[in-house]
Amino acid sequence: MRITIKYEASWRNSFLDGSNNEPLPKNGRPFVGSMTTLGKRDGNGNYPNFIKREITHDTVMGILNRLIGDQRKLYQSRNCPNYFFLGLEDNISFDDQQNAGNPINTETVYIRNMEGNTDQNSFSGMIKGNHPAFISDYSREFWGVLWLSFEELKSFLTDSSFAFDLPSSVDISLSSVLERSLYLRDVMKPMTCDEAIINVVSIMKTVFPEEKYIEADKLKPIRLYAAALYIQLERLKKKYDMTTACNRRGTNTFVYGYSKRGFNGTRDFMKNFVTGGEKPIWGNPYKLDRRNTEGVSLLTKANGTLDIHIDIPENKAQQLKEMIEAAGVSSFYLGKKGLAYVDVIR
Image 1: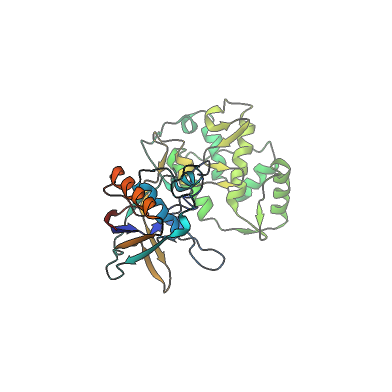
Image 2 (image 1 turned 60 degrees about the horizontal axis):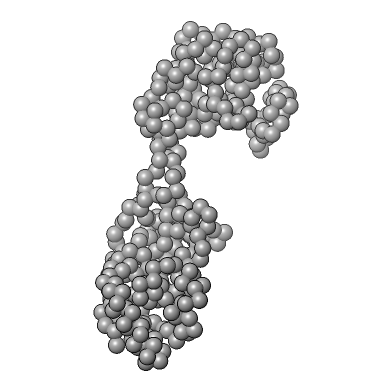
């Protein structure tokens, strides 16, 4: 028995890791089609997330089950005691005659990111410039530590009675705090650790023992400014109600946009002061831009003919043919997307 199937625009790439022929993981199969994931290399310099798919024996068995009206996943059908092809799979072979001269592989498709990831630098909605964190009686004393000189900062960290008077020219607002934070993180250069810095860091290790402040014998100033914000938060709690100056998750307190050792970036800071929160990633082009000499890889679509050869007894073949006609499947996907249909059954 031979079943001839013709197909158009059959997608020959997969955006998901794992296999569709096994039970789904609890959180679904991982999406590997994002721009970031596609560009990752393994230890051998390859791009394992650009997954090519070809017609396989499992593909053929999935098609045959679909043609007789069985829409379960293949592993589910195979585990059923009434599986129609039980004991027959070894008698089934196929010949995929792909029209190699007419692949549709110059088309870039835009795929939806279903992971719920958010943009690293964007946020959405209206900005809440009048957030209490910037207009309260504590605001200048709290955020003002970001405007201390580095020498003043060391004194602030080592002396709990250190007091400072923020110049009137410094305007505490959402935008000024953000700009200052980016300056401290991106513009101030790492410093070589002298005795004074090592002394300050040793004190910080007693306050935040889980944090690491020195890397490769260098200290990034933002590390200590971030620690200073948390220390100032605790000091000001003795004078003010600081509940609007930070987030609480369980028993932990987090200064907006800051960890105890650094500034987390624009998105992490701004998500606290906008009406729409973080901006989700809607999708991205399916495009692997290999650097240097390997060029660009896009989604491959294939056209061709698939001949399925089934070596089974005549009565069984007649039963299969009748089941296919009864199911009346006019068209279906071949692998992923595209259009396929049964041309001839002989």
